[in-house]
Image 1 (cartoon, one colour):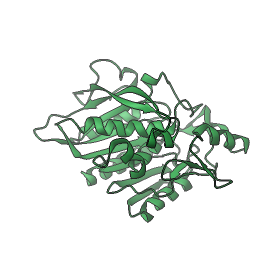
Image 2: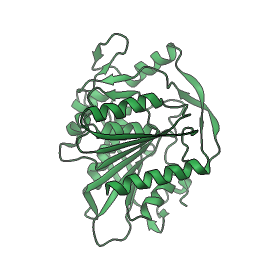
Image 3: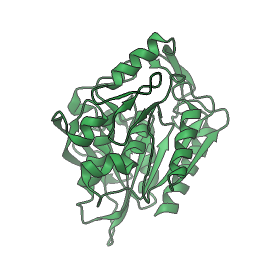
Image 4: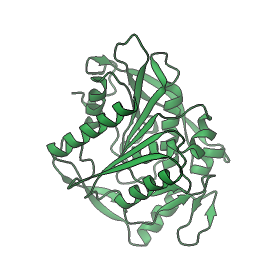
Length: 319
C-alpha cells in the first residue's frame, strides 16, 4: 500500500502505476462571492496532485480524491489503489503543499472553503484535457473538508462562473463532509451525489448532511446518504478510534446558507454580505459556545470494509 509520507517523491507508485505530478492554476478567493465573481480579484496559486493512469487502449473514467484537514493520508492512497485495481484512473489532489499548510485541524481559516471548492473545479478542468481520460466520466471523492469542497464544486451556481457550463462531474462521493455552508438552491445538474458518514461523528453534523442531501433532491437532483452505525469521523482509516486533542470543531453551530451569488446569509438576522468570510462565522460559533477542542477519528475493520464496499459500488454504478 502507498505511504503518504512518500507521496511527494518523484517516482511514487500505487498498484504498480507511477503517478505523474500535475501542476495547475487554482485560486485563493477570500469567500464564495469572490470565487464566483472575482469581485475583488482573487489571488491565483499553483497547486498540484498526482495522476495515476492504468494501462488501457481506451479512455478511462477517473476519480479526483480530495483530502481533508490532515492532508493526503494513507487512507486516501488505499482508496486510490482500490479504484486503480478496478481500472479507474485516479487524481490525488494536494491542496496543502504549495500553500505552505501542514494541517487545518486546529485552524480551518488558513484558506477559505471557497478556495477548497475552487481547487476541485480547477483539477476537473485540468485532467479533462488528458486524452487517456474520458472527460464525460470524471467523479470527485472528498473527505471531511474535502467532502465539503466536492459538494460545493457540484453546485452549478458555483461551478459555471469558474469553469463554464461545459464542465461537470459525473458523480460526487462526499465522505463525512462538513456541511456548515450550503447554497440555498443546490442545483447540481446531472451530477449524482452520495454522502456517507458515521452516526457518532464528532467533527461534522449528520443532520446538516441529511439536510443538504434533501435540498439537492428538492432541486431535482439525485442524492443519497448512508449513515454508518457506530462509526466515528474518518472511520475508513486503519486506526483505532482516538482523540485528536487540537481539533477545533463546532458541529452544532447554525448552518450558514449561501445566496446564489455566494453571499453568506447571517442565520441570526437573515441579512447577507459580499465581504463576510468563513472566519466571521467560525468566531461567532465559538462566542456562542458551539466551539470546542478535541474530537475522535478512526474506525474498525468492519467499518473500513463497509466504506470500501460502498465507495466502490457507488463509483462503478456511475461509470
